[in-house]
Amino acid sequence: MQTTKMSLTDTLGLGFMTFAFFLGAGNLIFPPFAGMLAGENMSFAMLGFLITAVGMPLIGLIAVAKANGKVMALLPAFAATALAIAIYIIIVLCICRAAYWVSGI
Image (cartoon, rainbow, N blue to C red; front, side):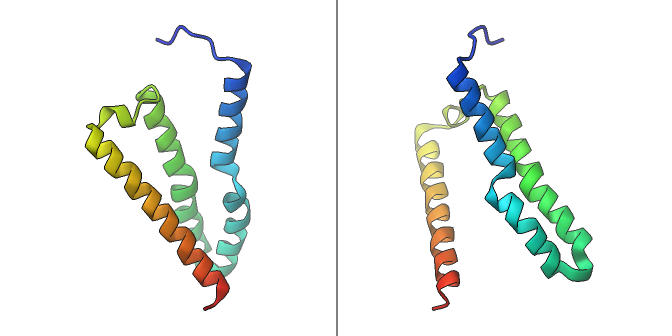
């Protein structure tokens, strides 16, 4: 059980982080666009969006809470470093792919 009290700054930071986690720009702009593109398959699009945009972040928050915020400490140093590098590479590749797609090259 945690005995230390969170400061106001920590509470505000956690609140804004949680808000952005679930209601970021992608979660406000993408669903109507996905629904429009899905057409008759809108129920499948809604189910996929709920799983990926609500379910997975919720599972992530629960996992971090269960690990007391020390998720990477549960892994050996090499595995934690490799996982962090892999995540960064995936993010950069997604950004580069999106930029390529938007530019129309």
